[in-house]
Image: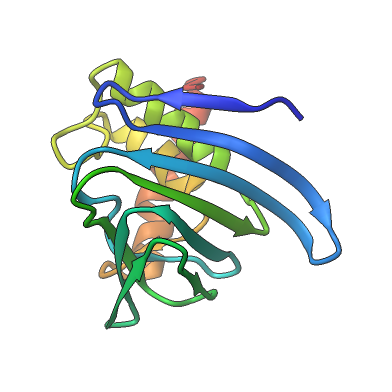
Amino acid sequence: MRKQSLLHPDGRTVTLLDSGTDSQGPFLLVEHAINQQGAMNGPHWHPVLQETFMVKEGRMRFVIDGKETIVEQGGQVTIHPKETHQFWNISDTRLVALHEVRPPGQHWKMFELIHKLECEGKLNKKGIPTNPLWLGIAWKSMDGYLAGPPRAVQTVFLGGLGRLAELLRYRI
């Protein structure tokens, strides 16, 4: 496997370190390096994915099923399937965190898509695609659901946008 880094316009990077299958099953391991404080995503959940974050440098704040956790350098946290979660960089300087996803689902595709859209100026200030068809593709690649709107509504509306985008050949 070839190491691959995505450099965002604000200087943050997402680096694919490893992927494959080990004794625990299929996995994806990425490293996030972020210089700016703030939310790294919105509240969401995954039906089958488990995510583990290991902070190498800096500090992260997590809210998992309503419970707040601060993870310092050297610490880690695991988010289990169906747990609603959101996380932030709260470091005084730079955050460097390892992010393991099991099974990997479409997560690397999601990172590549968000990188592409951000570099092309197609995201709003909150990091959401401005084009509804790109929003549908991004939603499909997150392997989960947004907190709030009912699952069925997301599946029909956002999933429908994703299917339409695919029919129209929207690609990374």
